[in-house]
Image: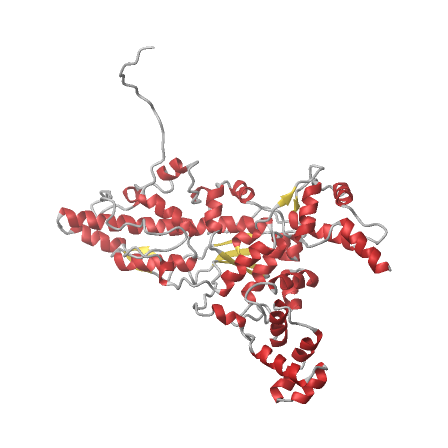
Length: 511
């Protein structure tokens, strides 16, 4: 075969991401507070943007029944499907040409003479410094660059929680409890109150608290000073009966009652003095080791409230949303004056950017409401009955239901918090794993399966200890399609011994 130079024509299609399209994508990932920071910067730079106190409140209702949520009904301000900001590579061409096309000003932003304004060269008011999930500053710094880089207590505990358990139910409860721990490292809310708020069993909440008690710094998550000291002593393997009695009688130490401590502990005076020195070396406020960071208050981006008719009312937190509009009258007046070409291009670019930002903010709000509304529809049972009823849910299920792409749903649920009757949660908390049904029915939540495995093992007798194979058999009879290795993994994640170990323990207890 001879080799020779030749010309070929090939037709191909590719997505060109304009700076404005990139900016619209990134706005989805910002929380309301981060968005406000960015908009404040734009207000300083763009003469055609101005604040306004008049802004539509975006709300939607989710009608519910006793068993499940019906098809969502929305009011006139709820987002129509065709205006959703679904910024994905799969259908980005249609988005760029319709919902987010760069000729937006040409269609809607006419000049005083009725002629369409045109966009100027890129870079005059560049929005490309909006970071992924963060806002940006003019000098290239990110918003997070202005914060201290020292790890916070909450971040430190959350990192350990991800390693300590793979149970979505325990992760859910653990994250909630970590948010309740104060700067000193203490948990001030009772187990009963936490269980009531989350709709969880008190033993499960106490189990999660026990997991948190194994974290660093030692003593974190204690309910009072005595528990904090006991946790630290236990971490050092120094919590023997005498030391436990010493801690239980701390009020005698406060009074300087050495004889009372000797009597209470049954130890010698020398040993008691050693205990005093040891206890005084402990840290009564372990959380302060991570207390140099400023307190970061989580402001909910979305509110979910129960309406009088039983529906879930979903609304954006308008108090934290930036409120801006385009001063079109000012632009019209400026456009009438004769200015050098360079200045005219600058003004046109600023007006284009201002118009685009306002449109992007509106579509961002509508998209967030649509995603949040579907999550509420899917997780209605959790909101009504508690954490035991968390449904298996993933990004694709939400994306398919609202006809968006997974990447859009992922962006919307990043850095967004929702305030519900059961507390404030990150949107991503509502996504849990699932186990298929063997009878074609609805899939089962992995957490519900873990709970059922725990129930089966708790109800077994010394003479009928259940093997993993037997548990598989019982679960399949209940319609759960599960493998033996999955049962073993779930059992081990709950720190439940094998059937052999449980049978030996039962035999020893019977002696």
